[in-house]
Length: 363
Image (cartoon, rainbow, N blue to C red; front, side, top):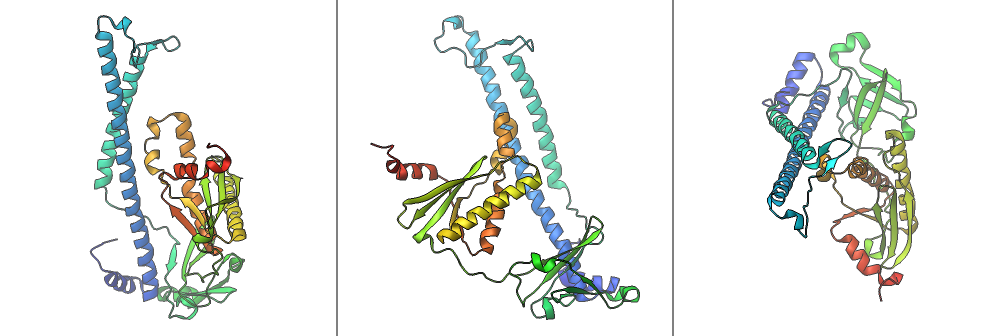
């Protein structure tokens, strides 16, 4: 997609070249621009991740090399056997592998330097690489407007059947319009407005046409009251989600845990997350209060997984916080429940100081 062209120039070019109207051309431009913007954002995130990995590996190499230098200085002393502190990195030998700690660390440093070079070259290539996107065949995007009937001039849905206006260049083959039933589409739409812009997306999946619609949903009745009247705080852990309800004065009134196993296959993991979010939504509706959670970001920690222990890396890799937050935000929004995010700094210490005396742990 040539970025030197303006949108109006592209619109005119597509209409004249392919014999389509303005609405069809707008859909093509919007779909292409969306993919280009997504690719640019992906490159930015990829560059950030690579920079974090390079920084983490560089810090690990520096620390490991210093460990070897200090160990050599220790054993260079004439009376190192009489040292009271001992060596922080002894030159012990492994009977199984028949190599010393020093040899193993040198080998790890060598591999880390190779990986560092690989990531550095990859980062340089990524920064110079032009943005290219692929628009699959049979991918149709139709942008709507609130001023048009049924919210869209080209694609219109009357509640049972969808009618698509065929481009002029294809009218001789298919006629002016094509229509089709949409199955159980109506049952899966929540908060669909009676008027407003509808943007339709048609694409092929497993040999069938799939239809998606984007719209501005109707507002829902607010169920949760202001946070000053109380709220539910949640804490997400690898094995469960802990929740606690406090009243307007900050007194703990109810608490509990919702099992949430991590590291499951995608389908089972998604179902467990949705089920946990529905339980939290039911609790919030029961107490008529908002839900408060910590705003966590594990992207920086995940960049240094190669320099952490296997157990820590496995736990962090299976951590599904971003997916949980996305599902929780959507489910609570559809039910009129406010979701509040707070800074996680010192939250555990604040809770400990506030509730320690309540549980008789402080004299």
